[in-house]
Amino acid sequence: MEFKAFRVERTDESEFFRSVVTRTVNELPDGPLLVRVHYSSLNYKDALSATGNPGVTREFPHTPGIDAAGEVVSCADGSFQPGDKVIVTGFDLGMETDGGFGQLIRIPSAWAVKLPDGLTLKESMIFGTAGLTAAMSVQELIEGGVTADAGPVLVTGATGGVGSMALAMLARLGYEVVAATGKADEAEYLTDLGAARVIGREEEMAGHEKPMMKAVWAGAVDCVGGPMLSAAVKAMRYGGVVTCCGLVGSPDLPLNVFPFILRGVRLVGVESVACPLPRREKLWGLMAEKWKPENLTGMVEKIGLDGLEEKIQAILKGGLRRRVIIDLEGR
Image (tube, rainbow, N blue to C red; front, side, top):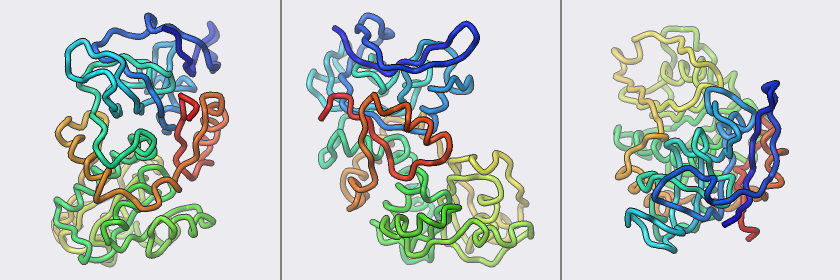
């Protein structure tokens, strides 16, 4: 059985080149679950894998794509039936295991979640890993007691995949969301997603060098790290919850203990790659119904495998706004 895939190869000089190639199913890694991929999505981690970043992928040739949604072709262990629609995100998909930028993937059954009612395969990839990470962040705020009437909730890095998804979900749930971004020209886009107000990085970080800042936020979803995260923590109201899932600003956190011991602030790390199956299933169910943004399809640009190279270069330069999904079947 032949299929098309976006393949990354390394030369003897450790240079990397990318192309769409024809492969056979026998070239895929072992695994009980064979899935025909209808859609994938483009994430920053995919761009790193495609350009040879050793922190993501070390073995080449390789097919990136940490997200995939499609139909089961076969399942040797009986966990799924042929024709079942499934979502696959996280674990090792697209890292050292050939990923969703190929029309077929073969993986452990435990990596897949059955597509919930209320969600199409295309919509699931508009969410993708970014949406799952955002949903985990929203759930942490809710479980931490941050209600919609508790006060404004900050989202940093709001134009990025996780940030835009978190913003849209929180707005759907009735929260007053303040979007922080370094891209002033994206204010209208963020407002369309549901932001009550859009502020610049400088405004959000003003005074971040102080031990404490004025108590403003009831909660925050931080996708940036570094000084922006520090400022969010220092500006929390009593009992506020801050989730952390990114480091584009910096992996270092200039912070002291005062917000934690004087205001009872909680800082929660969010990591979706190894998220347990029951939590995944619950969150995908919520994204299919109560948390599903009304303008979900307006958050996406669709391309084919032959359009990936251009978008990979764009995401590495911070030049993408909308989510990018890859249609592998030409729908």
